[in-house]
Length: 230
Image (tube, rainbow, N blue to C red; front, side, top):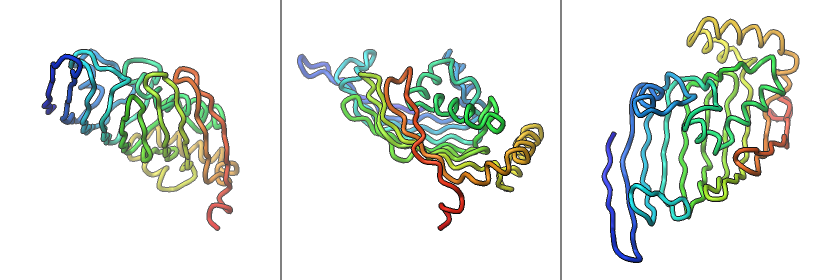
């Protein structure tokens, strides 16, 4: 962990600036050291941040929060997204709700755990509203790209997600076996069962809006492979 900051304690013009980085080989172990539970397991992490707000360092104010966050995670797994502070952060981006939607629509394909090779995201915050246009999850079952905004004060979001299924791809199955033979077997079995359906789906697009705690997820596009390849 590296950090440096500045606190200006001037009447009527109090402000805090904080800049630094966090990195490690295991996110859940590092989070546990600080007493924080996380649904992301066994992933390396690198986070660069540059944030400032108009309040003391120990009282960040969402309405005046500005700055940038760059996050990179290595290979890992999403488990129980409903628990812990990290789960709350993922809910801000509606990621847990999206996974629940995918599991419902493709219940024979998406397991309780979601394995990924990497996650990359850049987010900038302006006056308490977080924006991202390049969040990308490279998953074994699907790739997920997300963009949009989250109002941290009103706790409302307006996001778009594009899901590209990979279950029928040989590379995806091989990667699953490389990570975990048991998971690989499950992925392979699912690809056999859902082959006729999954091979027809190339792109799924969702619109995610509303309160962070109860977002509305609407499918706006299900594009067949033949159409996407034209």
